[in-house]
Image (cartoon, rainbow, N blue to C red; front, side, top):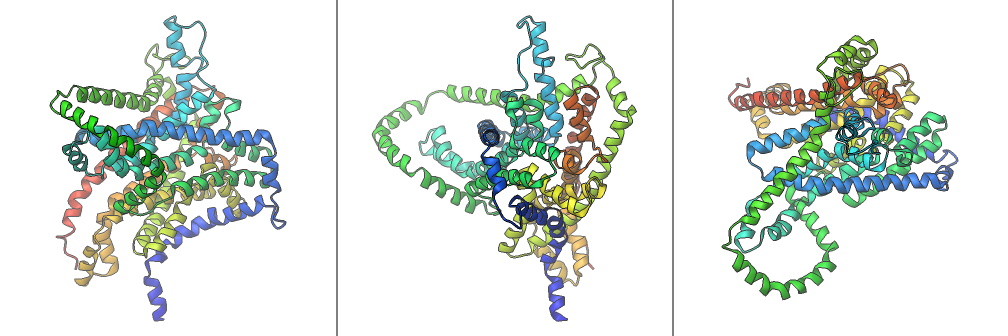
Amino acid sequence: METLQKLSRMPIWLTVPALAILLVVFGVPMVLLFLTSLNAPALSIVNYQSFLIQPANVRVLFQTIEVSVVATAICLLLGYPMAYLIAIASKHLRAVLIVLTFIPWLTSGVVRTYAWTVILGDRGLINSLLLKMGLISSPLELIYNRTAVYIGIVHIMLPVMILPLLSVMMGIDKSLMAAANSMGARPFASFWRVFFPLSLAGVRSGVLLVFVGSLGFYITPAALGGLRDAMLSNFIASQMAASIDLGPVAASAFILLGIAAFALSIFGLNLSTQHGVVVQKERKSWQLSLLAFRSVTVHVNEVAASFKAARWRVQLYQAAGKGNRSKLIGIFFMVAVMIYLQFPGLIVIAMSFSAGAVLEFPPSGFSLQWYRSFFGDPTWTDAFWASLQVAIIVAILSTIVGTLAAFGLSRTSPRVRSFLTLAILMPITFPLIVVGVAIYFGLVKLGLIGTATGLVLAHSVGAMGTVVVIVSANLSNFDRRLEQAAMSMRAGPLQTFSKITIPLIRPGIIGGAVFAFIHSFDEVVVTSLVSGFSIRTLPLKMLENISNQIDPTIAAVGSLLTVLPVLWLIALYFTWWKSRPLARKVHAEPLI
């Protein structure tokens, strides 16, 4: 009996609901899917051989890797200086820039892809303006090519690169660079030798997230690319639609997963919250990889040292003209990136008020006809209510289960915490199409394909991971001595949890619920695989209209979904703002 009581008090049991859903819907089906790819129980690699011996399949595979690598490189080239400029900006400007970066990230990927079809199409914004100005006589081929695919993917993934870089950069002590400058180091030298090595943890996280996310892109290549720009996700989706044999589909999915696993093995998935340890490991690995290069450059630096010292003495008291020029370049770059992030959404909003029979920019007149079409068409409203109902249930389920899991993980040993956290976060670290295939396989076994229950479970697999990340971040700053003080004053565990723990982590819980809702409401890839023909959510309805390009009502829907993230951010801000006085009062509130 005492043993059972001790086991019941172990916080690791709080992770059981999340792990149970994960195992039933994703984990066990993933193992079974792998066995299916090997033609179990025969256990052969014929499905992998069939994939690799076909030149067209190999071309799609290498094309997927190429697109992902190039998109990741572009995101890094744009995201790193953008994150640096945000980090060194003033407090109020930084807040504005972070919000402007968040808004596109929270906007539906389907909406952003649609926006680029409107901008780059033959009758789109760019071609229409050029034709009216007389600069071209026929539309330019701006869409259905590789360049359009890169534009769309980078637009969606750039915030994913900026945010982890920014989180690391804001934690770097800026006085270190000032100290380097005071010792005679030029600005670029102090940045390269001091700031850049300390920011490598953010570089690694951003590169990993963008690369793995790009591997699973499905909608954007199909909408913006041509037949020669298909990626492996499109190939897998077409296999599932055309064949009932899951063996080749499973093999294709695990080949894609193998690429993601290779990226994880190179960059690693660090779950540590100790920034100094991360930076130290990053610097060590980079020093080993650059040792040969530095052994050569050290001799060059010794020869040039005297010339550098003389030049530094000459430039020490010169006017800061170059500094002003660098500042102007930084401002121009920041404005250009922000226009790139915000412009597609603004165009969709403007075109949704068009009075013409077709979408046009600038609008020939102001009209609400497309909004009336949306609210008056049962197919659109039914899709909206279906998405809303599923998203609310997913948010409630994921928030409860994810919060319990995060609380239990924060009370377990570091090794167990790392292992279980990695298991819970697998669905949001794997390519999305692979996750969708595994969930489809699991729901087929459970007989839940095409049901609301199956759709809720499918969305909850990823939403739980989002809640765990957000609530765990909140718990990492939680002072457990407050709970101990409450218990020392004879407060019970439930009373301590309700009066101490909940008020302090409430912003994280609400934030997790909001992001779980957004995750479900905007989900389209997994939904397209598991919803069957009985459930049509709003993203699926939008995807159908993008493919057919017959209903301009999608502009009104896109406009509403573009404005929606602003409401989420306002709600999160007021949640955080109202939680501050509550957190301050928690010390003074009587516990018994």
